[in-house]
Length: 279
Image 1 (cartoon, rainbow, N blue to C red):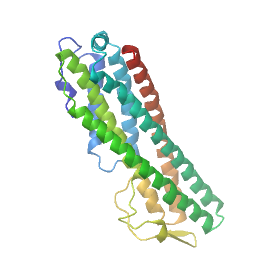
Image 2 (image 1 turned 180 degrees about the horizontal axis):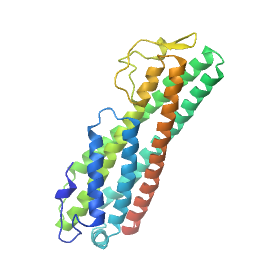
Image 3 (image 1 turned 90 degrees about the vertical axis):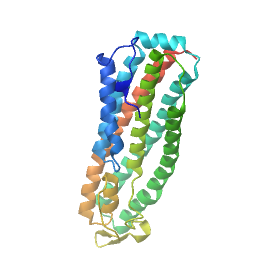
Image 4 (image 1 turned 60 degrees about the vertical axis):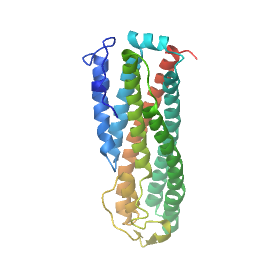
């Protein structure tokens, strides 16, 4: 990903302009997420909050007089269609991800309810089966599809050749870098939500047994994010499982707030682009 600090134009505000400086700072912060091989809930929440602020700055960039002039001149260019399409795809992915998170939160609450009621091992096992065999399986399937879409978007952004003036290239490159950073952030969220140690630790439901208030299975914990910790908690006692569920619920709610904020920002970005470039 090219650094936005190297992109300049005499026709547009320099890096000292508040909007440009804000975008550059936010991009640099978000880039640190890309090095996170196993993102945890705090990393994801910070990334989503950072993306919200980035989109707010993007809307300000789109409404700068220089930007409006550029879009007015090139409204029929192919790169404009590309920029218009990105928020739509991101909204689709964000919507699906929000559904994942909502279902996950409900499932976590169902597990907590089963543990509190203590109606017997079958009730708890049923909730665990619903979580491991139903929800997580669907999440992984849909996430794989969206990650594939994000990768194709990233390739398209990198491969498209620009033959425009320097001032136009500046705006396009900044907006493309924002889109590329959005792609990386959504990928990390999906990776976080579908993380599992089921193969390495043999935590499949077929190996889970409930015996005298304990959930036992083969495998040992290593460095996990919050969802992997929950998988691991299925191997521990009920008290430990309850604690991990409480922590996970708090983490899920923070991620949910971040996704809601991003959804609102994407709608505003799409609206701004449509106002600038009438279809």
